[in-house]
Image (cartoon, rainbow, N blue to C red; front, side):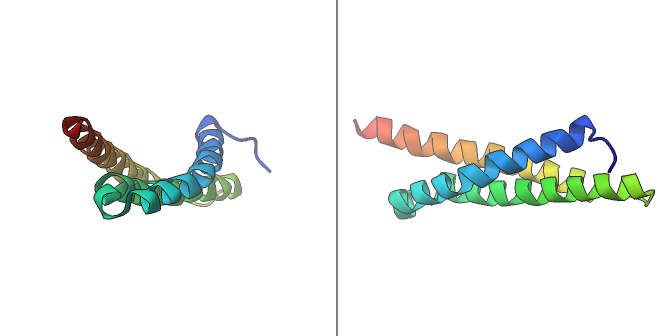
Length: 103
């Protein structure tokens, strides 16, 4: 097996982090119900995209080690996941601002 480059090491670390965070986010989404879907629901979608991108990037590393051509799919899905993160953060901030306004 070829030594891991920094991108693949980061992908492995992100996989571990998101696998731990997904059950926590699902629990929070269930607890918040319909009112929390704007922020937490999109955060679940973001985590799914990031998990897919990390898997693709690890697969690309394995292909490159065998000398096979690799595609840009991992980078594209990764970029889509980042935009989802920004959208979900804006939803969570919106949820918190509504909570603070009601106090």
